[in-house]
Image 1 (spheres, rainbow, N blue to C red):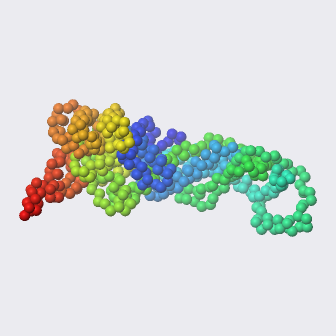
Image 2 (cartoon, helix red, strand yellow):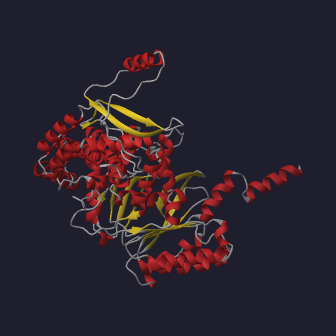
Image 3 (cartoon, one colour):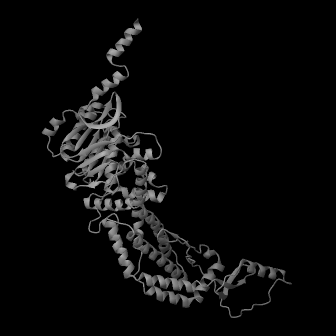
Amino acid sequence: MADFSLMWPSDCPRNFKELGEDCCNDLSLEFLCASLSPKEYDRNVIAAMLRQMPAEPQVVQYRVDVFDDILRHPALRQNMAALLDQLEFLKSLHKHARDCEATSIWQIINRLNELDSYIDCVTGIKQILESNEIHSEGLKALLGLVRHIYSDSGFPALKEDIKRVVSETGQIKSVTLGVNLNRTLAPVEVGVVSINNAPYTRAGVLSHFYEFAASKDGLHDGTDVTSMKYHVPNTSTGIIGVPRQSGTRGALTGLAKVYTLSDAETNPLMNNLNAVITDMLKPVVRKLNDVLAKYVDVSGYSLISLIPELTFYLRWAELTEQMMAAGIPMCKPEVLAAERREFYADGLYNLKLGLKKLKGEELDIVPNTVDFRAERRIYIMTGPNRGGKTTFTQAIGLIFLLAQHGLYVPATRCMLSPADCIYTHFPADENRTVDLGRLGEESRRISDIFSEATDRSLLLFNESLATTNFEEGLYIAKDVVKALHLLGARTIFNTHMHDLAMNLDELNRSMPGDSAVASLITGIDNGQRSYKVSLAPPCGQSYARDIAKQYGVTYAQLKARVEHNRQ
């Protein structure tokens, strides 16, 4: 079970490409993770997993099916959340077992509690999966594994052994101590007078102390115990038990708290008490060891590896359910063969807009339809400033990112051939352009992308080469588009350079490659930005004419004003 994963099929190599830092920033991964959980651990886990981009359709389909199972069954999700808490507790027990040099009695008692928690986890997973109708290969495989562990490890017998042994050791309720003091009245030795099966009560302790304080001289003459064995201080530290709390959560048992002797090194009284009890309970230690020896092959720590994966799936499922309940569309992606290099989405929108709307912002989300195939695999996208080009470009990247991690995507329908990686080229921070200048820095990043990208990649250019002289930028951009045609990767190249999208038929005929370049524009409706995207030639002049007319700055309109003012 050590190699089992809900993210990777057992018969598929775990190959992925790490998204670059620029890509993570351009796709706003930090914003997405902040929307998923207030916990820093959750955000870090999810961000780390999102950066690892799987490309094999088999892997993507495996994840899609697991996530779909988790999303479709609220009861499954609720119990898995409880399981996540239980696994976190098991992880803390395991950490203490590794980090602490506990004395033998405490080691074994904690080991018993550790095994008890492990049994609860395996039993809980088994009950959760058996009580829900699951279809995914991943969850079915997990159910098969825990069934095998449950039957092969003799869990019922182990559970009874743990219960019996803990019950016997649990009869120890109190210890009567004898303490020797030095001249400064500091404790230097401690001995056990008796081990009792009943606890001291608060009233009993106080009454005995009162009787002692009220006695004639307040000092006892001699001792009643002459054969007490004393122990000198040592510097070991240990864990004092792991008492279980009552109550249940979902299909799982309640959690427990770990108690430690953190002050044992500076407290000789507690230090020696630990050693004395261990020494006196050697028969119990032997009994516990005999019980554990029957189960030396039982190990539940591979379950801990599921914590990040369950965190990832559960947080995304919770958010997806909230969005769908709010009427914000999300859909299960359909996975196509990688070599087809295709993509189709209907009702596509930018996930960030959906998250903002979910948080209460008043905004209208404009859905769009787009596809990538041989006839138009590279898009030159033009349109007005603030017309939605950047938002649309980012939306494409986000839908690939989510789909390839198995998640529902922001659309009403989506089909895609997985990309082997996402590369972005958005405007850089000015601090990064000091040495090379803007044009040099942008050119270097474009060169780096072409050094790594393949025909199965996804490339997103956002106003690239726009921060330099127009003629220089257009000259370089034309060569970049020719190279994109040759590469054949799915690409959005949004730009203000309308000339770049002119005469694309001629470019497609004259340049080698199996992927055509097409013009995509953001729409205008009566001079207003509609944020609708469509296949059409660039309309820079017509848009400018509409805007000029809307604001009264055509020559005819301005001429009329001049003549009116002269009258």
